[in-house]
Image (cartoon, rainbow, N blue to C red; front, side, top):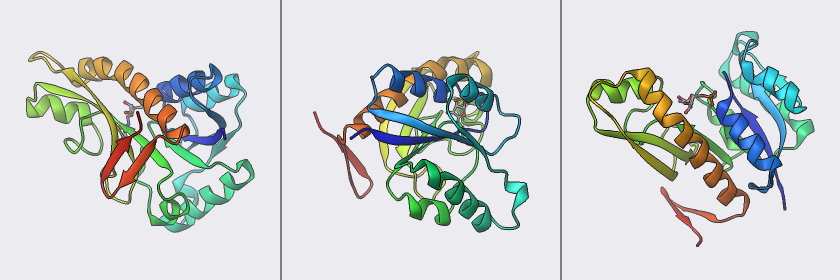
Length: 202
Ligand code: GAR
């Protein structure tokens, strides 16, 4: 069964683009049913129009509480009947209200080797810490900050003269490739979660 994927993104949408193109090329057995953003000016919303994928804008400032905001996201998504949520540069921490509706069915990409450098500016944190290796992580989302079970990681070197931008540029193509592989496995039901450990069928 082809999975119905809702992509959440707050910005330029290069990960969203990599995933949409891979789904359209048949490399991932999923179909992008809607793209949701929390940012009215997000480039990803313009891209979605070009890709002819419906969009949703759900802004936090329109709701009094985080719970009401997340209920609104759930309501807005309903007509599209997504079975999986793929976070692709969605810069908000999802809470219990949202996560409990899609338990075990939300994936995220993070631009560091988790559990190191959670949260915002992960590449800057890596450069400042002086690590020699960083990378990206695709993981299932739980209610913590970038703390859910890890699906797949790819490493890149970090050089002494790296900046946040130069490291981000090195990691980004690895994000696209890693996310495509991880989502393809997920859509083929090849990922199994046991506690905090994800195993992958051969
Ligand atoms: C990506 O580097 C992604 O890993 C990161 O935001 C960027 C979005 O780029 N996500 C986070 O930092 C989440 N905490 P994109 O819009 O071009 O995909």
